[in-house]
Image (tube, rainbow, N blue to C red; front, side):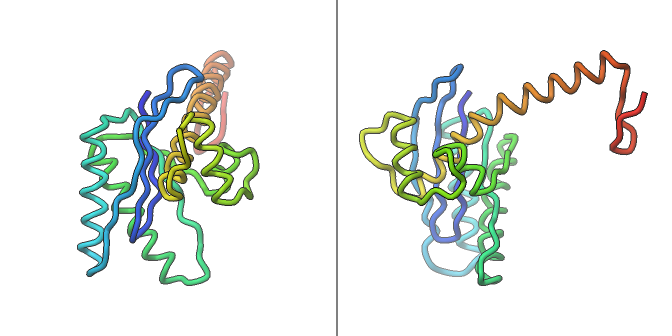
Length: 181
């Protein structure tokens, strides 16, 4: 399974592409999409086009993106949300399923603690993917998103399969968000 991870940003959007086979993770590519300066619509188009190009180049099976966290500055949060939206549009335009993870979930999956510093994430991403050096911080964050999804995807699928099996065996179904017999 090829996973595309995205760390959205208005100036710099990080991306990371990994391959998961069984429990093994293999690095494919990483880098950034730089939207530069200029008006907001033009910068959002750069992000949309960049993500679309990534999906065409690497043909991922699925994608994951970091959720927006609330900044002290509401304007910054709004702009980040718009950059994230442009990236999501590029992913869903390629018919990819998109999982979303909080920064805490990503750090937990990569380093074992949800309060890890950026440097710790970079070092662990480098170790987990056997990289020759440290990736840039935006690329490392995006690779962390992909690693988080690789580790979470199987667990969620297993939980879903168990849930369906239990409900089916018990003759239960969902009605208005509740299990009924």
